[in-house]
Image (cartoon, one colour):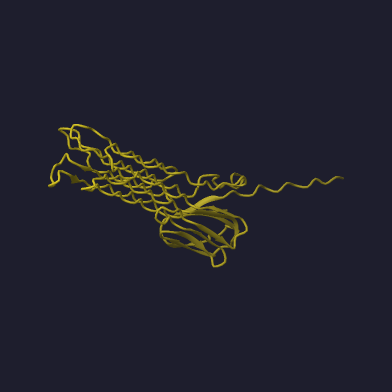
Length: 278
């Protein structure tokens, strides 16, 4: 008589156990044999723009966008009930059991953050993207320069993750923030000049602020640069601040020029650690 072997039951898929945005300890619960960890570092805040100045005169320059945070992942980590992992959240995000350590570093200034994974068999990661530059100052009478657009982060993806129940491409390294627009410069009070437009951020990064606009005759609004936006993802960099202008329109200085204020840099997102279990 032929004996037909029975098929084993499919392996359980991972389910998200916890998202951590502050330092804590994760303890493996009963019935869990493997975990997967994603860590994303904090993006850096965007730089503020500079105000206009005289007697050169010159407009202000836009601030650079902040660098995005690094990101990393490790999966199919064997564990047993009661094992503990230390999760540390600050500028960087890390998780360790003393043998395996994942660290996703935050952006620093305009530079993107790095990452490291030690002790894990299955892992991947990507550095954060640098923030983009702001529009430069004007020293001749013209509209302001635009800030540069922020660049996308790098998605963390693996062809085997969907079969394991893990999100493929959901997590990425942080995108750099867009640079702020530069201020315009003109000494004719009947002329309208718009400031530069801030760059657009991608995948959670912040957009740059607009540059200060020149005075329209009879309307002294929008003379100051605007602030960059906050990074809206956990690892995106903040946008750069917009620039101020120097203008005769306010006519408050002996030389006929007056300076205006620059926009502040946008704040960054937060670092996070995601733990999946099965």
